[in-house]
Picture 1 (cartoon, rainbow, N blue to C red):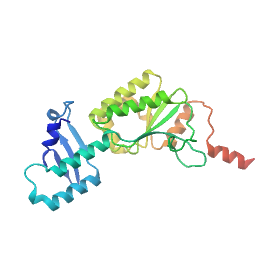
Picture 2 (cartoon, one colour; picture 1 turned 90 degrees about the horizontal axis):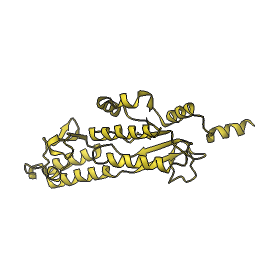
Picture 3 (cartoon, rainbow, N blue to C red; picture 1 turned 60 degrees about the horizontal axis):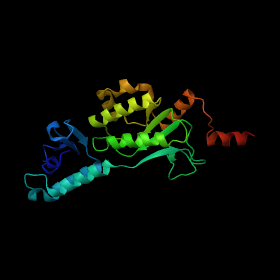
Picture 4 (tube, one colour; picture 1 turned 45 degrees about the vertical axis):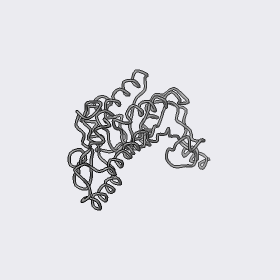
Length: 237
């Protein structure tokens, strides 16, 4: 987004409310990529905007007001460089967890579970690609599948969709399949509109991380025994 656009944001024109929620609506002419920006604002920030307008509406001039501009900047910055993690399976712990926080966690050979803790949009799309490719390079074994565990991804804009398409092509050329787990249905709808479902394939979207892991293990014979299976075998013995 152009800095002069951020300064010139206006309620009702660029910051639009539908129902109880606000969204940024920036025309293509005001963005560096020449693509329109339609980005939902989190409920927490919507509540702050409503509270500000309720208390200070009479004092606000025609412009959006400095406090709201700062709030929008803060919102965008939080999404600019979000937290991401590679997930592994820690013995005795349910689910899949950040390997930096669970150093004893095991990664399934050939499978990278990559979690991205933010929406995907113009400000972080390139960083997302970089971190995914870094995770592939740093994997302990040659990668066959990369699964984005996408529950925190609440939205995808057109710039991020282009980045995903490029990433899918790069991974495909390296013999790696790009998959998604736990992606919300409204986000899937956006990917369909952007044509990514046709490119990536419906079979590459899984309802849960466990389903994605099961799909990978079914497709590839790897040396892997889950800790639950080991515990069950020990009890039976």
